[in-house]
Length: 564
Ligand code: ADP
Ligand code: ZN
Picture 1: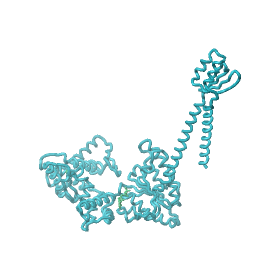
Picture 2 (picture 1 turned 90 degrees about the vertical axis):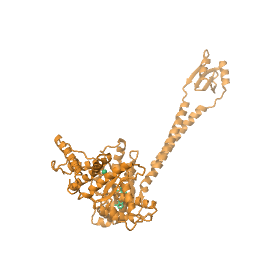
Picture 3 (picture 1 turned 60 degrees about the vertical axis):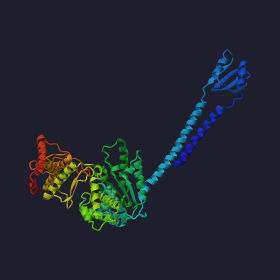
Picture 4 (picture 1 turned 60 degrees about the horizontal axis):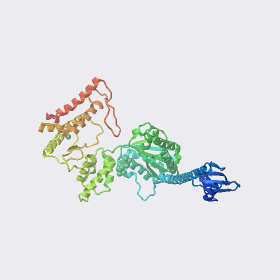
């Protein structure tokens, strides 16, 4: 209907323009009936009563009342010729050329508007219809669906989502007892822990359509586009329910509206977020749509997203523990050729803090190395090299070191190693190397037998002492201090500061916090809380004292038996 009215309107405008143009064209081109030379002759013979000039066109009335038209090359001259004669000359404004110009301009403008508008409409229409359906992963696609068997190491999250799967598979059964499915589930945790994988597994297990988006899909340059995409998406999802809508990196749209961000994007994001909130409030549980979202920045999410009826269920996903890592490695091991003497639990032990994605990377790097070496199976050596490469960077083959530097480095690392070996309660030694990788020239690696979640006072003090071992060895052997200990000293200072300021491990200062704990996933340096001058001096003293005691213990080697 609207289209019909619009077309009629365009037609009318075109007709009006056409009439205008036609008229002016006629005006312009009314053919002269007499030659200019004839007109001049009449002028000389004083036979003319009146000349009306419009631009170059003249309408001439003779004394006998005869009227004719002619074209005049220079209208101004006619006035001069009329001087001293009985001939009247009237100049009219020449509107016709203006009319022509306006008509032409109108035609061009209308054409541009009509063509441009049609193109834009077609484009956005095509985009709209594609936007939601493009992101659809149909349950009957040829690819084997991802299932919970592909996910390991996050048993709690799996358990929580199994309930959702049950509901999607069998909405009636749940509906009968009056159970209400959560509308939104937020998966939060560091990158690479398997949030996306888990969402896909939910879809695969429940066999329903799965719409997969990223927060950035909604954020466009033009205000309002994101919001309309959100509306389209939910319209489409309702048509295909039961289904799952997955929004990865939801912080892209759902970042706090009060947060600082580029001014322009703020408006668009705010509108998009609002649209999302409205849509989530709008569909009711009979629609059987489950919205899954993932973020690794839960700290910046707008609190409105977590209200009841929106993402009211939140699942924390953390990097897997040692058992989880073994299970994840087992999944990947099925996809490559691994030598039978490789013990995956040992690799799991050697990779504390690795996420699922990092483990996937580890296996792939190891496979690449084996391939490069012409091997048919991946061995322990490939895993070890791959791990070093991921943790420390690529080997710096091009780095030329003098023998003297290398010797100093060897003593430095040996210093770490001896202390680590001798101190009780410290992690077993894994590897000592002076092959430079990434930013490190050498390294002494220790590996805990189990993942540590809490650290004792003794363990921490030992850790500092081991870190000081490199510097101490250089001092004993060369009686020199070198810059090689920079990283060790930084790390030791960090541990000591945390011991005093966060973990209440100072005798004199007692169990009091002097620094904020910023345990965001990204961490970062912690800020000290404001304290009085005296306390501040005391804190500094305690930190230095602790570091110093750990360092000095190296001189008397009895440190090996008693904690510093
Ligand atoms: P996230 O969405 O949390 O950033 P992804 O789900 O994209 O992480 O993980 C990337 C890849 O890492 C996955 O495709 C999978 O191969 C692997 N991965 C991550 N976590 C796990 C896990 N818990 N179990 C199995 N594989 C995992
Ligand atoms: Zn060192």
